[in-house]
Image: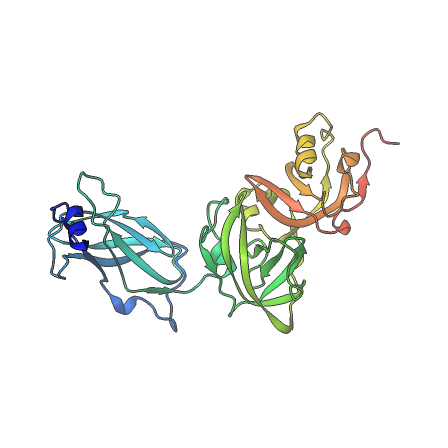
Length: 355
């Protein structure tokens, strides 16, 4: 009966194998691939690697494939080329990658073809290029202030040769700073723990390891789902707040270098136009953000959940001694997250017309 069923189900057609079955990706100079003991520098800028791609059939014999294969790199980003064209089963040339960290491999894949042929879905991967993992400043440094070098990656950060300190806490996470890079040089980072940080995470604690999912939340860098190690019995002094001037506050690139760091606006104004019928007032009602001016530049403070008794509209038209907080971005809007009542100074100049 089983034989009869098998015969009945048979279509009588033979499976057609699509080649290539195997793809080899070889580094032109394996000796320059780096090692764990002597890794290549973190590739925050594009680096070029020479490779050879070769195709083989199901028997492991060279296969004279003519067509395109897709290239990729993990981890990191491939900047050029996205595809290569093989002639008689081989291609040699240079690929350009950036933001590789740890063991990084180049892939060649027969997928997403651009012509009418059927892909074989075979793939090959190079030997590992061993890059150093990035420090916080290396991860953060970018010309695009709405991203960072490792966005979307599970980021392993290099702390072993750095002094990284917890600078501030909030109800759902904490901030850290790399003391080897002064504030204003991509030193700060927010770590989102989704709830109150662990008891050992206190201001001044030294971290010796920090990993997590790198994301850009509304254009601010966060490390989510973190794993970390706090150095037992070791403390560090957090850096003082960076005092903003008008030039810095009006420059997105300069402010990006301060993201995740403590900053201070001295003698800041609360615009007199901050009235119930203004757009800024609507933002305050919806998000707890209120405008402050540093010179002629407007940034924002956020204090609704941390200093709930402070009502900023009462201070429209006044100059405050200072406003201090942790800097973040929301799509081009720079916001100081106030963490303590002392972070908001008293008025030093009354509103026009005040008694």
